[in-house]
Image 1 (cartoon, rainbow, N blue to C red):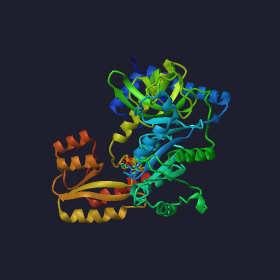
Image 2 (image 1 turned 60 degrees about the horizontal axis):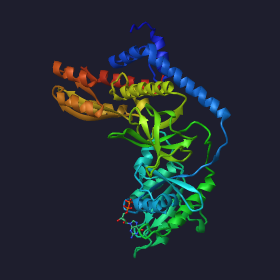
Image 3 (image 1 turned 60 degrees about the vertical axis):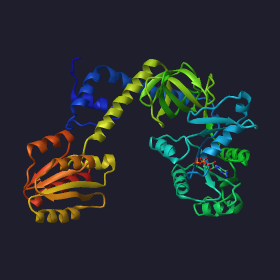
Image 4 (image 1 turned 90 degrees about the vertical axis):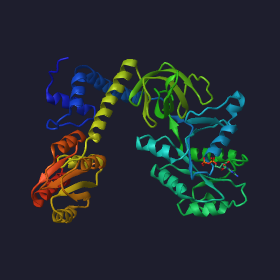
Length: 471
Ligand code: GDP
C-alpha cells in the first residue's frame, strides 16, 4: 500500500487515538511501519468507530431509561488465615437459589446470592487486596462494599491494616466480620477497640461501622452478615439502568481448552444478552453463551450480575472495561484501535531514559531519580563527579550514582544500565566498538566527556528541560 500522507496527518491520527507524537520525535521503525500500514484503512476506521461509540453513548445518555436499585458488589478482604475463603464458602451455601437448583458452584471469579428476603448480593470471590488494587490500578471500580474479616483470636494484623488502607483509598465503606468467635481465645471486644484506632468505630460506640460476629466454620452469624451488607447497601442507594446496552468490567479471563477464551464480566450498567457484540479490553467478540456461577445458561445478565461469556477474539485482563456496541464491525474497529494504542504505550514506556528524553520520562513515568553509571580514568574524577552530581539533585529529581569504577566502560556496565534504566557517563574513557553496539541494541545512553563541568552542564540542562516544560 502506498503511503502518501503528510506527517501532520499521521500525528493527528495518532493524537486522536490518544498517542502523543511530535514531528521531531523519531518514530521507531516498528511504530512507523504500524502507522504506515494501518493508516489508510484501519486507523481511520478505528477512529471512526471510537467517534461513533462516543456519539452512541451520548445518545443513550439522553434516551437512558430509569436508574433502578441494583444489588451491591462486595469484596472480602483481611489478613491471611483470618477466614476470607471460609466466609465466602459459608455464604455460598446459604444461597437459596442454589438450594433450589442443587447445582454445583464453580469458580468464575464472582458469584451472586439471593437471600430469603429476595435481596441479592454479588461477591467477588478472589479475596484479598491484590485483585482489588490491580483492578483499581486499571481504572476499574468494581466494589461497593468491603467486608473486612478479622479473626477474633488474632486481632488486627499487617494485612488487616493494608486492607483498611486500600478500602479507604477507594472510598469504599467497610463492614467488619469478626470471625472465629467459636475459638477459645476469641475477643471480639478487643477487635473493636483495635479497629477503632483506624477509624472503624462501631455503631453502638457512636460510630458508623457495622460489625458482625461470625464463625465461618460453624456457620454462625452468616445471615446477620448478609443482612448487615444489605443495610450498608441501602445507605449507598446503588442504582443502575438495566435498559441500556451492557457495560461493565472483566473480573477474570483465561484461555480454555476447547472453549477458547472465556471471561467473567460483571455487568455494571444495562443488560447483557447472547448475540450482543462487544469489546472487552483490546478484544472484540459476540456473546455466544452466557452462563452463571452454577454453570447454567442464562438469557440475560443485568446490573451487578457476574456472567461467564464465550466468543472472545482473545483473552482480556482483569479490570479491563467491557462494552456492548452496535455491530461486529464497530467492535472489531474499536478493539484494533485499542491494540494500536496499547502498543504505542508499550513502546513509549519500553524505551530507556537518556539525557535527551529525561524530562518526558519524569513526567510520563513519575521518575524521581536519574541513575548514572560512572567510569573514569582516575579515582579522583569519580569522587569529584559524585559530589557535584549529588549537589545537582533537586526536590523533584535526584542524581544517583548507581555504580562507579575506574577503567573503560564494560559490557557489564551496559547490562546493568539497561536493567536499571540508567545512563552511562565516561570521563577520559571511550566505549569500545563492541560496547557501543551493545548500548545501541539495549537503548542505553552512553556519554563520553573530558571535563566534569561539561557533563554536569548537560545533566543540568536535561533537568531544566524537565523543570520548565515548554508548552
Ligand atoms: P483466608 O486465608 O483468610 O482465606 O482463611 P481461610 O478461610 O482459608 O481460613 C484459614 C483457617 O481458619 C482454615 O483452617 C479454616 O478452617 C479456619 N477458619 C476459618 N473460619 C473459622 C472460624 O470461624 N472458626 C474456626 N475455628 N476456624 C476457622
